[in-house]
Length: 263
Length: 303
Image 1 (cartoon, rainbow over the protein chains, first blue to last red):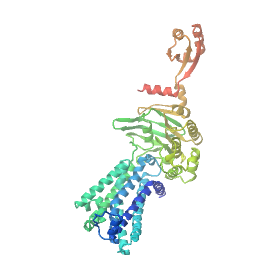
Image 2 (image 1 turned 60 degrees about the horizontal axis):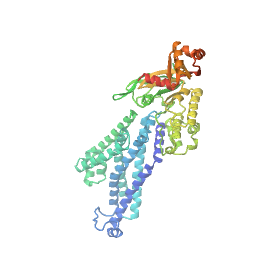
Image 3 (image 1 turned 90 degrees about the vertical axis):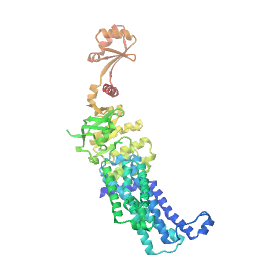
Image 4 (image 1 turned 30 degrees about the vertical axis):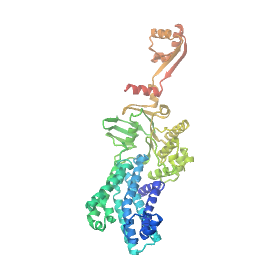
């Protein structure tokens, strides 16, 4: 356990000292703020037009300014923007070892490689949960400041549960990003994979196959394709996501176990 | 024999390129082993294989009595290394980089970091971000990382890279002391032959992936060829007289060179002979081949 804790300490220090941590916090803050801005506009469209917040010609669709709508907006934005943000974190945590040429220093150590890679996974899990939690808490503050109707503690709890489950579902797809960052020895293959899987997943969701594709599950769970998409998801969707997570973790650990500095 | 490093038939190929071929290294404990080779000779590939950073195509590696690899297996708690250029997390300070290494090497003593920065002369830069260090200090940071856990064996790839002349001397003395006082085995690759000449107790020469010579430093003195160098005003007369006396004479750069024991052991006879021939010597000296010349001759022969 001490070995693992040492590796986790090292990974945490690297993250704390990086600009990427602050960049991801900043990017996450934008989501509830944009949600709040939409609520202001929906609440007073005429006033927003007069203030120049929206074009005079624009026709706003998207429902009413209330807490259920606001929470839905947060949920969908985390499913979309969160996927990209989380992939960025994963690509950095694994890919930076190659861009800084420090990967070779992780190969001949008394601390097993598996402990170091597990520490990276735990760090990213904590990092991503922290961001999801922050988005929700800031979202609550923004919603309260905008003073939208329809609040209930029950709604807040269920929305919190939905948001954290979408964040968890996104995290479960991230080990493949780690694998691409490792085997591809840098950020680019990882980000390329993240973008590719994201686009393909959306297309397959629109074609009605999304419940069988783990990469479609978070967006469908967020209700972006309507309430029917949530109903379409079944136990098979979550099991397949779990399988994708397990395979990704095993493949990444295996790659590092036999990692070679040949190139 | 108590060996710190032993490779048996070590080979590594990258497709059709044989980077290292059938290398059998035997480094005894407490030795300072200088591993010489031209660029691309296979030095770094060999070092990577010693550290389990690459999988050999054939052969095996034992370090401190333990087999190396696969899956990172090896006695790494007792091995310090610096492979190719040093690396560090640029946004972390010198101290933070070393603290990471300290924890990953499982060293409980918190003072280890302070001690090693003082030993390597980077204490004034300890709170500076690694990314802002000069090349020389970055190299020192890499060496500090290798020495942090007081290893039994140091595997260093070009340890003097980027150091100024004072730094080169300082690191040489440090390595000498470690070997002499603590019995640390040092395996270092280098292309700075004078450094290896001064420091190494044993030398291995690798060329085109093959270990072409392995010898004790003392043996090198015997092996390096000796010649008698003569300078005269009338080179033609001197060359004719020496030729007549049965000496093997070669002229080069305005000097005459004579090889063989007969010439080297009796320079006084040579002087007499030249005076009688009307070509008295203005310079007469026994010259010994430097390691550099020996190395170049050896690698040239193996072309």
